[in-house]
Image 1 (cartoon, rainbow, N blue to C red):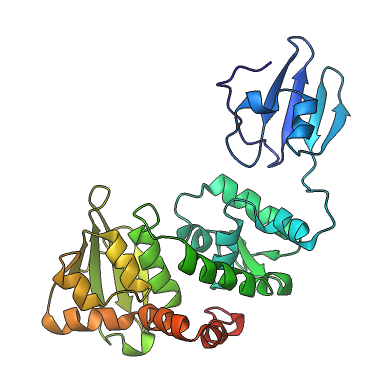
Image 2 (image 1 turned 60 degrees about the vertical axis):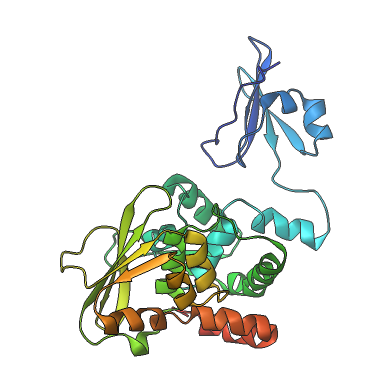
Length: 308
């Protein structure tokens, strides 16, 4: 039996494998979905008791049990969950449907997701028909295009969003200011009101040690820079309370209230300080969605998303 502290790692092929070493007579388990105590799955009977369908494979020197990646149920919820309920898959699908088409664009909207796991998840989505992968015209890297089957999952993501907004609490763990800024720049930037000249806004996040991110506004758009773009800072925004920053983005509180409370501090010319929050249409969109969920769903249909 494997020691209680033995941990499960990710199999090279992204799947699950449990190998019985004939020489020492103990299980070595690898599980694709996360970290599980090996003592919980120490023999075939207990694997089956835990609900893992298994199949035997034999090689010259060892016997292998491979997890079948299926719930083995006819139920459409079970069949859909085999694809959708993988860790990070809903986030990857969200990013694709928000217009991300390159590996780096998808990764930027998923802080904490390793590049190796992102590669594996994209290949899995390709295998089940949710993503088409094409080489870039210059031959460097790939483009990832959601298929009609993926676009049909947008109402599922929207329903999950509505449920979470109603039934879960926003905590510091969820309020990553990087993710808020990414959502703002990717999906909710009001390009029609951006300044005509170049403007650099530096965001200083102080919730987990100081770090800075820059919003570079020019040519009628904006991009997030992880390093100083070198043009000088026109406005600085200090975020001391990431929950307040996220709640403003979600339309729960007003920008002025967040500033007055000290959660957000803005320095720079008066006209830019006043204009900055108006560049984000998310607060208004989210608040309107709570007043009229049907109308919000229409305004956030796949056809109206960036890049579609």
